[in-house]
Image (cartoon, rainbow, N blue to C red):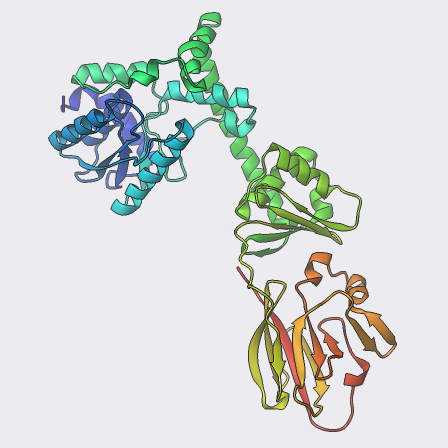
Length: 456
């Protein structure tokens, strides 16, 4: 059963696919091994026929505890691994998962944990062409779009599927040639769940209606995958010119340029932006985002249940997601002796700002000179508040109006700092204006400089 010579061709194809995926003979792989026919063929190929170096293959078995006999499967896998000289990691679910979705999530959490533990470059699974047909049909009836029609890929997200182009019949023929045994999961023959029904009823019916239907479905998956790659490349070219600013978990986009794109491309870019900030847009979320970006009002905010927040103001679209790490609650700064010099940090609206002061002018984007006045506090740097007003040389004006005239987006105003003097009067709106009483006059003076701290 351990003689790999009979399957040299299949073993060679597996070795070539692994090499194409960047996994040479020395790369360590974790093999998901249920004990069923497909996973046993994959383990045997990687151990004996695919040119792997010794010690680079580790089997991993997860017992879902969902049916009688599962403990026997685990014991059988244990014995095979011992006989083949393959390292094994195994675990059993403390509580049986409620369904296939929970079982899949628990299994992958275990496999990825094993890969991390043993320093593997990928988790190898035994998915094959028949599985691909089932996956594409399943995605088709769910309406998942082009990405779903592409089915599974050879390598993605730390997973590799070196048997993906091979049929189940080819794997069974290999098993027969080398005398390979396996454990059959009786639930695979039951007509429950969409995948089992697609496998036992839908796929055979399609094949009887049109011989070669499975090959046609696989061809569709290959074409869809190629089209999807082309569209991703288009996204890669279209997105950089649209980006105005990138922070950790937050992006700002040129809204008119985005809206000028065809709706289909705009929808893809919105989904891409959501993924880039750690969120996602499903079909409903995409519709909401599309409607929001083309809204007629001047500003606003749109919260999508997946955790993505969209803000629109003055020609910009801000996309914020779960990855955004704010600077925490507001933290103002009081300075008593401004002429002696110093540096500190404030937080306004989740944004961090470095503040420098002293007799010498600091080299920062926003700098202004002020007259020192006696009192317990020379100045305070704090967040802007609605209703803030400042007395300029031409008269009193609201800070909101100053920012509107300067083109500061609405969502930015909540994050910008302002400076008030010791009496609580606004002294300076960085980048927009200084109060009239701050100009000139005798006595010592000092500088204030403010610079944004990038959260990325």
